[in-house]
Length: 507
Image (cartoon, rainbow, N blue to C red; front, side, top):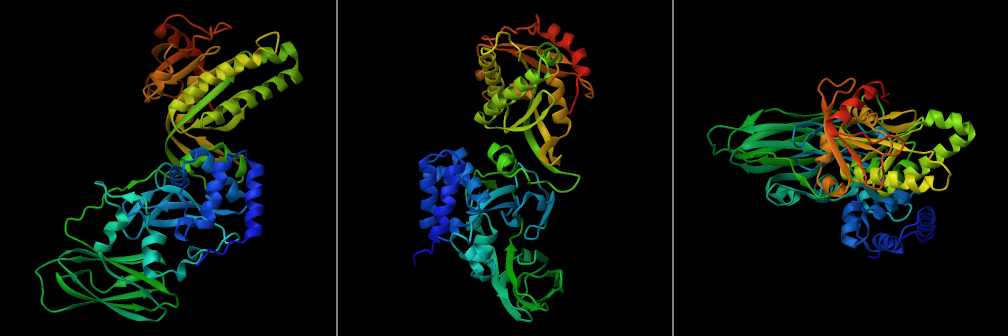
């Protein structure tokens, strides 16, 4: 049966996306084709990274198109907490402010710490305003689709190459909905291991060990569904035939997934296909522009295991204000913010905030950050050509590591020692210099990008950091370190600047 498309609404939403972002006609054509021709499951929790690969469009354009579509109501954006060992979508939220930093998978009996890097996957589902699909009403799905498609991730594989979803049927011993007040029996044969009973509708589970010598007579395993819990009357059974007698004593429909994990079954961390992680999304400038109201609730924030932070500052900005006056200097500074913002976006980074005359940006990896830093200095050189004097001169620092993503002053921000260190590394830099830490320069591809640059290494002591850090000063050949920025000698120059850095501000 042909899909029922609400044509007027679709035309309106697609038109809004075309106006809002200068996307290539190809990505919009592929997006419309998916909406019109995709089956219900293809329009549920769409992975924009997979979409880009399968349809031959540029990844960042695909992400931008889905973000604009989510903003105008064409798609519903979801933040999914995905179990690392079974791929179950443990919970999903329409807004970042509903996300918790801890979650529990009932299938695996696993507590996990949610980080934006790994187990928070961002997906997009077609809005019922455009086209209604069966996954908008999961309670009406077949029991197989509810468990194996609605819950489990289709792009997760077991180490060795088998899709996890293809391995599940061999473990399943019972699968059914249970109506309110209903009783149901399941018969299964078990040779050992563990039997788990899972009500995924209400995130409840119970586990029963299979131990001892095999028995010939059927064993009854009585299980009750009560308000807020799933209760098994036995903690273990013997190998052989088991009759699960399930009694739903609640007033709500429940689901039952009975799994038998064999003896010695090892739950390993799955390998997930490339996906739009929470970390990647909040590093996309389009997301920050469109969803600036998104906040991370609570005082603890959400962890990011690895992010690259870049700081810039201006050399001699105080003297600049005194020399040309507040209004002219203020205008110059804001023009330079615009130039830097463009460079950050073009190099897959996000403009986090300004601090006085400084800029803070985030990148998914050091390679993009270093490319951006070099291009920033070139862009500011071009910017200065419009004036009789070189009024704007950058100093840049880059560091990578773990952070906490938080909401501060109604803006998504980063907090932690990595941020403090990046700020202090920036404080080492002179005019047109880029300072980076050891982990940054060791990142694949960075040394190739720096071919032709002068790179000096040495250890420095930074305020608030106990051990001396290995840092590197980078001076590109097309810059001379004007304004007295170039210092002679690798270690000597670095040590000479460390004292000044200790007095620099940290955000």
